[in-house]
Length: 234
Image (cartoon, rainbow, N blue to C red; front, side, top):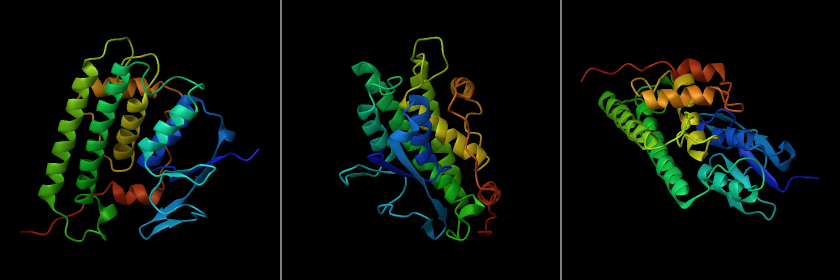
Protein backbone atom coordinates (compact mmCIF):
# COMPACT_ATOMS: atom_id res chain seq x y z
CA UNK A 1 0.00 0.00 0.00
CA UNK A 2 1.33 3.44 -0.92
CA UNK A 3 1.82 5.65 2.17
CA UNK A 4 -0.56 8.60 2.43
CA UNK A 5 2.23 10.75 3.90
CA UNK A 6 5.28 12.01 2.00
CA UNK A 7 8.19 13.62 3.83
CA UNK A 8 10.97 15.53 2.07
CA UNK A 9 14.20 15.81 4.07
CA UNK A 10 17.84 16.81 3.86
CA UNK A 11 19.19 13.86 5.85
CA UNK A 12 21.91 15.84 7.65
CA UNK A 13 20.04 19.13 8.10
CA UNK A 14 19.25 20.02 11.74
CA UNK A 15 15.53 20.67 11.18
CA UNK A 16 14.81 17.58 9.03
CA UNK A 17 16.80 15.49 11.52
CA UNK A 18 14.35 16.45 14.24
CA UNK A 19 11.76 14.46 12.32
CA UNK A 20 14.08 11.61 11.30
CA UNK A 21 15.31 11.05 14.87
CA UNK A 22 11.75 11.32 16.16
CA UNK A 23 10.56 8.62 13.75
CA UNK A 24 13.22 6.23 15.05
CA UNK A 25 12.64 6.95 18.73
CA UNK A 26 8.87 6.80 18.32
CA UNK A 27 9.08 3.51 16.42
CA UNK A 28 6.84 4.56 13.53
CA UNK A 29 6.97 1.83 10.83
CA UNK A 30 9.17 2.68 7.84
CA UNK A 31 6.35 1.97 5.40
CA UNK A 32 4.02 4.47 7.10
CA UNK A 33 5.71 7.49 5.49
CA UNK A 34 7.34 7.86 2.09
CA UNK A 35 10.62 9.63 2.94
CA UNK A 36 12.20 11.48 0.01
CA UNK A 37 15.83 12.59 0.58
CA UNK A 38 16.88 15.73 -1.28
CA UNK A 39 20.28 17.29 -1.82
CA UNK A 40 21.22 20.93 -1.47
CA UNK A 41 23.79 23.26 -2.96
CA UNK A 42 24.32 26.97 -2.35
CA UNK A 43 21.98 27.49 -5.31
CA UNK A 44 19.14 25.52 -3.71
CA UNK A 45 17.68 22.02 -3.67
CA UNK A 46 18.46 19.41 -6.32
CA UNK A 47 16.85 16.01 -6.99
CA UNK A 48 13.79 17.35 -5.17
CA UNK A 49 11.23 15.76 -7.49
CA UNK A 50 7.72 16.99 -6.69
CA UNK A 51 8.70 18.67 -3.42
CA UNK A 52 6.42 21.62 -2.59
CA UNK A 53 8.07 25.03 -2.47
CA UNK A 54 9.93 25.85 0.72
CA UNK A 55 12.60 24.54 3.03
CA UNK A 56 12.74 21.04 4.49
CA UNK A 57 11.32 19.16 6.24
CA UNK A 58 8.03 19.31 4.39
CA UNK A 59 5.24 16.82 5.06
CA UNK A 60 2.57 16.35 2.40
CA UNK A 61 -0.67 14.62 3.38
CA UNK A 62 -2.73 12.41 1.11
CA UNK A 63 -5.24 15.20 0.41
CA UNK A 64 -2.50 17.60 -0.66
CA UNK A 65 -2.27 19.50 2.63
CA UNK A 66 1.30 20.60 3.35
CA UNK A 67 2.94 21.07 6.76
CA UNK A 68 6.02 23.24 6.36
CA UNK A 69 7.80 23.49 9.72
CA UNK A 70 9.58 20.81 11.75
CA UNK A 71 7.64 21.45 14.97
CA UNK A 72 4.37 21.38 13.06
CA UNK A 73 5.37 18.07 11.49
CA UNK A 74 6.29 16.63 14.89
CA UNK A 75 3.03 17.77 16.47
CA UNK A 76 1.01 16.26 13.62
CA UNK A 77 2.83 12.92 13.76
CA UNK A 78 2.45 12.76 17.55
CA UNK A 79 -1.33 12.96 17.16
CA UNK A 80 -1.66 10.69 14.13
CA UNK A 81 0.60 8.00 15.61
CA UNK A 82 -0.48 8.45 19.23
CA UNK A 83 -1.00 4.70 19.63
CA UNK A 84 2.53 3.83 18.51
CA UNK A 85 5.58 4.00 20.77
CA UNK A 86 6.14 6.33 23.71
CA UNK A 87 4.30 9.59 24.20
CA UNK A 88 6.85 12.30 23.34
CA UNK A 89 4.76 15.45 23.72
CA UNK A 90 3.81 15.08 27.38
CA UNK A 91 1.13 13.09 29.20
CA UNK A 92 -0.04 15.92 31.48
CA UNK A 93 -0.72 19.63 31.03
CA UNK A 94 2.42 20.43 33.03
CA UNK A 95 4.61 18.12 30.96
CA UNK A 96 3.26 19.52 27.70
CA UNK A 97 3.86 23.08 28.90
CA UNK A 98 7.41 22.30 30.02
CA UNK A 99 8.23 20.63 26.70
CA UNK A 100 6.93 23.68 24.83
CA UNK A 101 9.00 25.93 27.10
CA UNK A 102 12.14 23.97 26.32
CA UNK A 103 11.47 23.75 22.59
CA UNK A 104 10.99 27.53 22.48
CA UNK A 105 14.39 28.08 24.09
CA UNK A 106 15.99 25.57 21.72
CA UNK A 107 14.51 27.35 18.70
CA UNK A 108 15.81 30.66 20.07
CA UNK A 109 19.24 29.08 20.45
CA UNK A 110 19.14 27.77 16.89
CA UNK A 111 18.27 31.20 15.49
CA UNK A 112 21.16 32.89 17.25
CA UNK A 113 23.60 30.17 16.22
CA UNK A 114 22.86 30.76 12.57
CA UNK A 115 23.95 34.34 13.18
CA UNK A 116 27.15 32.96 14.66
CA UNK A 117 28.07 30.66 11.77
CA UNK A 118 26.96 33.24 9.17
CA UNK A 119 29.69 35.53 10.48
CA UNK A 120 32.37 32.95 11.29
CA UNK A 121 32.20 29.87 9.03
CA UNK A 122 33.82 29.62 5.61
CA UNK A 123 30.74 27.71 4.46
CA UNK A 124 29.05 31.09 4.05
CA UNK A 125 32.09 33.08 2.93
CA UNK A 126 30.83 33.49 -0.64
CA UNK A 127 27.32 34.47 0.41
CA UNK A 128 28.60 36.79 3.15
CA UNK A 129 31.77 38.49 1.84
CA UNK A 130 31.88 40.94 4.78
CA UNK A 131 31.46 38.87 7.95
CA UNK A 132 31.12 40.76 11.21
CA UNK A 133 33.36 39.33 13.94
CA UNK A 134 31.60 41.19 16.74
CA UNK A 135 28.19 40.04 15.53
CA UNK A 136 29.40 36.44 15.48
CA UNK A 137 30.74 36.71 19.01
CA UNK A 138 27.51 38.29 20.26
CA UNK A 139 25.44 35.55 18.65
CA UNK A 140 27.53 32.81 20.25
CA UNK A 141 27.26 34.50 23.64
CA UNK A 142 23.49 34.74 23.29
CA UNK A 143 23.30 31.07 22.31
CA UNK A 144 25.31 30.06 25.37
CA UNK A 145 23.00 32.12 27.57
CA UNK A 146 19.99 30.34 26.05
CA UNK A 147 21.55 26.94 26.74
CA UNK A 148 22.30 27.93 30.32
CA UNK A 149 18.64 28.90 30.69
CA UNK A 150 17.60 25.55 29.22
CA UNK A 151 19.87 23.74 31.68
CA UNK A 152 18.13 25.62 34.48
CA UNK A 153 14.75 24.43 33.22
CA UNK A 154 16.08 20.86 33.03
CA UNK A 155 17.41 21.06 36.58
CA UNK A 156 13.83 21.55 37.76
CA UNK A 157 13.03 18.00 36.61
CA UNK A 158 12.94 15.06 39.00
CA UNK A 159 13.88 11.53 38.00
CA UNK A 160 16.76 9.17 37.39
CA UNK A 161 17.70 9.66 33.72
CA UNK A 162 19.62 12.37 31.92
CA UNK A 163 16.76 13.32 29.60
CA UNK A 164 15.57 16.91 29.96
CA UNK A 165 12.45 15.90 31.92
CA UNK A 166 14.35 12.98 33.51
CA UNK A 167 11.63 10.57 32.35
CA UNK A 168 12.17 7.01 31.16
CA UNK A 169 11.98 8.00 27.48
CA UNK A 170 12.97 11.12 25.51
CA UNK A 171 10.50 13.83 24.50
CA UNK A 172 10.27 16.27 21.61
CA UNK A 173 12.49 18.64 23.60
CA UNK A 174 15.23 16.01 23.78
CA UNK A 175 15.02 15.41 20.04
CA UNK A 176 15.23 19.10 19.14
CA UNK A 177 18.16 19.73 21.48
CA UNK A 178 20.08 16.64 20.37
CA UNK A 179 19.89 17.50 16.69
CA UNK A 180 21.02 21.08 17.38
CA UNK A 181 24.04 20.02 19.45
CA UNK A 182 25.08 17.31 17.01
CA UNK A 183 24.82 19.64 14.03
CA UNK A 184 26.94 22.44 15.42
CA UNK A 185 29.59 20.12 16.85
CA UNK A 186 29.96 17.69 13.94
CA UNK A 187 29.42 20.14 11.11
CA UNK A 188 30.81 23.42 12.47
CA UNK A 189 33.19 22.07 15.12
CA UNK A 190 31.51 23.96 17.98
CA UNK A 191 31.00 22.06 21.26
CA UNK A 192 28.15 24.01 22.82
CA UNK A 193 27.84 22.16 26.14
CA UNK A 194 31.31 22.91 27.50
CA UNK A 195 30.83 24.29 31.00
CA UNK A 196 27.15 23.22 31.18
CA UNK A 197 27.14 19.98 33.23
CA UNK A 198 23.39 19.36 32.97
CA UNK A 199 23.51 19.38 29.17
CA UNK A 200 26.64 17.23 29.18
CA UNK A 201 24.65 14.72 31.23
CA UNK A 202 21.86 14.98 28.66
CA UNK A 203 24.24 14.18 25.79
CA UNK A 204 25.60 11.16 27.65
CA UNK A 205 22.05 9.86 28.11
CA UNK A 206 21.17 10.41 24.46
CA UNK A 207 24.39 8.65 23.49
CA UNK A 208 22.97 5.51 25.11
CA UNK A 209 19.65 5.89 23.28
CA UNK A 210 19.11 3.73 20.21
CA UNK A 211 18.04 5.81 17.24
CA UNK A 212 19.85 8.97 18.35
CA UNK A 213 23.04 8.29 16.40
CA UNK A 214 24.72 11.19 14.61
CA UNK A 215 24.19 11.65 10.86
CA UNK A 216 26.75 11.36 8.09
CA UNK A 217 27.69 14.77 6.72
CA UNK A 218 28.98 15.41 3.19
CA UNK A 219 32.79 15.72 3.54
CA UNK A 220 32.96 18.90 1.49
CA UNK A 221 30.39 20.60 3.70
CA UNK A 222 32.20 19.74 6.93
CA UNK A 223 35.56 20.77 5.50
CA UNK A 224 34.28 24.26 4.78
CA UNK A 225 31.88 24.63 7.70
CA UNK A 226 34.51 23.83 10.33
CA UNK A 227 36.93 26.48 9.04
CA UNK A 228 36.73 30.02 10.37
CA UNK A 229 36.88 33.11 8.20
CA UNK A 230 39.49 35.85 8.47
CA UNK A 231 38.39 39.43 9.01
CA UNK A 232 39.43 42.62 7.30
CA UNK A 233 41.24 45.04 9.58
CA UNK A 234 38.93 47.87 10.51
